[in-house]
Length: 407
Image (cartoon, rainbow, N blue to C red; front, side, top):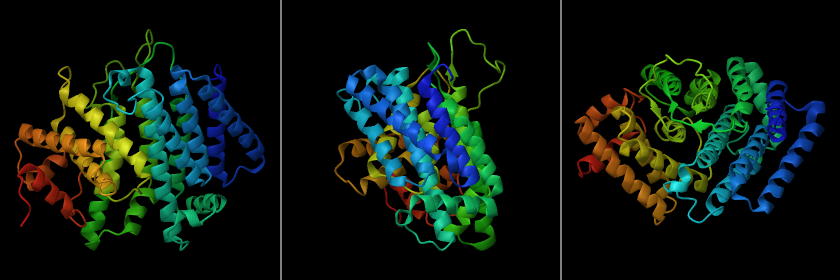
């Protein structure tokens, strides 16, 4: 890291994030933080002006760093603008670059650029959800954009210190891992499939907690979900697990594996796909995460489609068929959500068609037809017991698999 000035600058900015979350503001570090943020912007502009497409992953890495730093100061509009900038660069750097199924998308740089996009998407989604919950439960209104960024940061710090010290500890632990995510890859490094077992375990824990709440009260409330997901810590824990899964998926020629005898779990797959699927599950099935910009969401749907297709067509590795069913179902739900705002979007229509076809394929492979059978299979990954506000998923299943609407 210290051999690369951009990586070192990113680490300094991440240290500022860590400090502000821990103490509530940047204090005397603010001028240093601002200086390095401006330097990152200058580097980005210089690289873009060069027109060298080989710098794409590096540019996106720096833009993702900016998105993180803006978000941690409550500047959510600026953070989403940086993520939209990442997406614009992906889409315009070369013809048809926005289609991740093209062969040039299989390169390490292409995969790395997509991972930077996904991690930025994950972080802004999580932070928006956290701050919305803090504002709502604290009586500060339902709109984040009505509260100045500095005030959001103070509200977040006060809430963590008074009500969620365990969550704060996990969040700081995750932030300490961020510099490893944003460090340039070693020469010759490859990005392999990631093992998502620990991510699935965290999602299962939260799902079980939500089931417990439903059994006790008979209802699922926004405040109850906020309590279980944020105050008790699984959200911050899974954030660190996304980073760890990325780091562990990197292989470097000549470097010995740390745990060569460790057997991978059955939840192995492309990092982008399993990360996006888990976010969609927490948004659309559990209702624990907020939604983000529609254009950003659309590209996330496209990436999941690409990664699911990659696994389904691969003949080299065994598949966890239940895990693939889970990913295709949440992908279908997410594509339909996006289509509500843009019914004629060709990319989203194509994604919906793909996920419908893949869902039928998985149901045939697993020998399941009814929703009851499907839920039993989905619970081998993670799925809630309660049906509140999820009737539409059963209707979607029956319409897709049997072709008949519910009566």
